[in-house]
Image 1 (cartoon, rainbow, N blue to C red):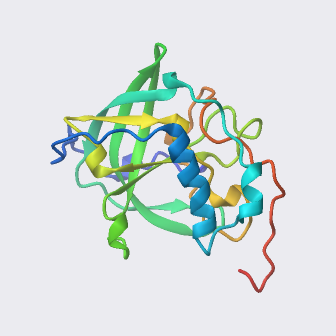
Image 2 (image 1 turned 120 degrees about the vertical axis):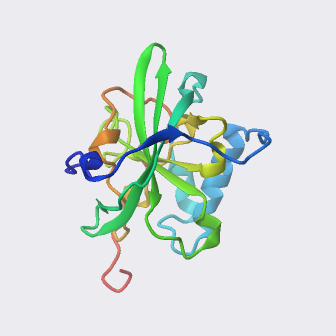
Length: 213
């Protein structure tokens, strides 16, 4: 994805306000609770690269409320699917769902949000939106391959959505080889430091044997 040419030229774009049928706003989860659930997910998933003994080596920035941003949302109608490269060398089909615009401390930020081009086999992912990004902390304090933020279509309310960089996390490729992790598109390469969310893993990077892959 790092080498993607502006694929925006390849899609038919018609702009419209992002809308949702959601009527109420759920009480936000505390960051501490979110991080505990994030850690637990490694132990609960048999495919996970980490075990319980690895969890103390996960590292995070302190919570920074200035990285919780309310963004305007522009939906992309009739977006054409494109192949998003993965670090494993294969591709996965996505389409642009919307473009977000917001400010942090006077700095303009624009981000593209993606959705799987085909209907997910698991219905629990039917409303899932994917926001991969890179920033200038990569290879220094954070994983060099970029980080991810998860959203849901119903998080978009009245043409706005809140994204919390405190909840950005590393792809599994940050912990081990043998996984298919999307490369953040060049459109989401931020020319600033995002000192929020997950830092580099402090444990030992794992290499899967051929029989594991």
